[in-house]
Amino acid sequence: MQPDVRTALRALRDTIDGAGLALDIPGAERARTDRVELVHQLDDYVLPRLDRLDAPLLTVVGGSTGAGKSTVVNSLVRAAVTPSGVLRPTTRSPVLVCHPDDLAWFSDTRVLPELTRTTGAGTDHATLQLVPSTALAPGLAFLDAPDIDSVVAANRRLAGQLLAAADLWLFVTTAARYADAVPWDVLETAAARGTALAVLLDRVPPGAEREIAAHLHEMLAAHGLGAAPLFVVPESELVDGLLPDPVVAPIRRWFDELARDAAARAAVIRRTLDGALDSLRPRVAGLARHARAQSDAASRLRAEARDAYAAALDEVDEGMRDGALLRGEVLARWQEFVGTGELLRALQSRVGRWRDRIGAALTGRPAPGGDLTVALESGVALLVHSAAARPAATVTAAWRAGAAGTGLLRESGERLDRVSPGFRDDAERLVRDWQGAVLELVRREGAGRRTTARVAAYGVNATGLVVMIAVFASTSVLAPPIEVAVAGGTTVLSQKVLEAVFGDQAVRALADRARADLLDRVAALLGREEDRFAALLHGLATHPDDAVALERAAAAVERAR
Image (cartoon, rainbow, N blue to C red; front, side, top):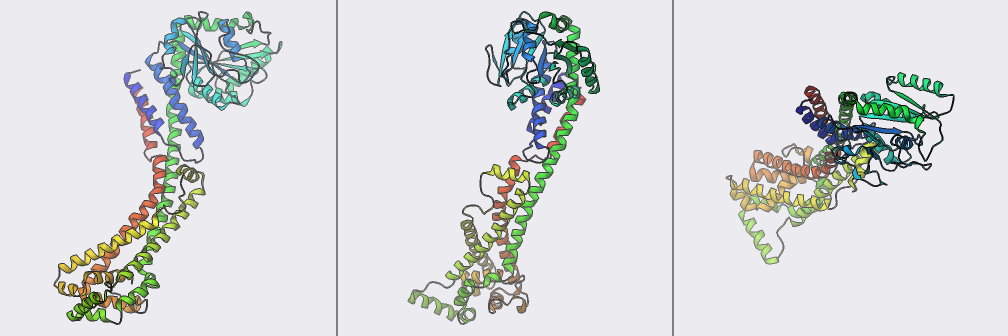
């Protein structure tokens, strides 16, 4: 192996670890488990083994509950190094036994880096107890793993992690349970990953050894494991908690020969390492397929939110054009503003302007239009609030129809089926800001035209109010009166006033610009509401490029090999 293989593997490891699989779509749980298993195998076995091909061979002893794994390990080293008993589960934390000369290798956290090392008995799953023993030859170690079918989920997960870190599996089963489904699921994993394997058939009734062993061998062959050495241990009475020496002598002899033969150990290590590397690409390909499914699901959820809020903006646009805002309170205030026609006469007579101003000063009446401004603000804010409430409820209902969206909503920790707190205040502020922008628009337009005197005669505020009314009157400011005549002819009056001030072309441009500006502001406000949903997807959903990154990283490992 070249050094760049390790570089490529580390890049693959980081890419796998970074793949987002948070959406609860079909297959997500399996994919997350696969991701964890891949990262653990790279961290626990592949990378440290590549760094030290001459490190001691690690044999992980695994099997079903009550199969006698701990008893087998104790019997092989002729000492009670790992607890055994009738209570289940017995092995609460893994125990690793090795020759004292090899202790430094396993004390280093390069192997199984997540486990804390201890020299005393551990009681939690994050502890690895190290036991030196001269009963084992240098170059060989045993690791007693938790039950693969333990009732404790943490035991099962740790057992799988430890088995993936093994150079060699010693799989312990019994005559009563060798055909159980769970052990064969694990053995199939060993076959798929090319892991070196030896099988110990324990507690075989006297006289049934040949028949049961033959059947088990057939099953192993059917699963592509026919080359695995098979050791049969007859049902025996324990002596001081250990199997009789003659019973375990064959398997002890096999391990002793493996320990003495450096070439044989290297062959086992090479087989398992190559098998692990060979398994990476198909396993990563499966992860990439699921990453694409995650990305597609996220896109669907994103589209539901985007479409709902786009429809809300269309609703506001339609509400601005259909004249509905020019009824009710707005109409009443407009009628007060227009009065008996003096507004139009003010455009024709500077005397009228001065008369209004002097009258207001003497009577203390406020400048006309204040109530109209407030009424417009309230009406437009209500329209925007109503439009924003609908997609909040719609998107939430759509997301709750599937597990992926439901999970995201649960993660959010807030009520997304309604507008954000303070939204109505934000909408009113938006309208006020827009009204100020309309006045500034009128001021700029009037200052740049020969009609400045007329704008001055009418007043920027009053002209701005007329522009605002025109914005909500029709789809076209200059449309025929029959199409825009709402609220008792108000819009026709608005049109005439604007034409008198700016001329036909100015009317069209002014109304279009004011309407577009308001829609832009509403779009930004609705966008903030939509972002509540988008932020969930951004934080938890798979990126569209994750699948491609996984495939490229796996291909880079293949090229490096």
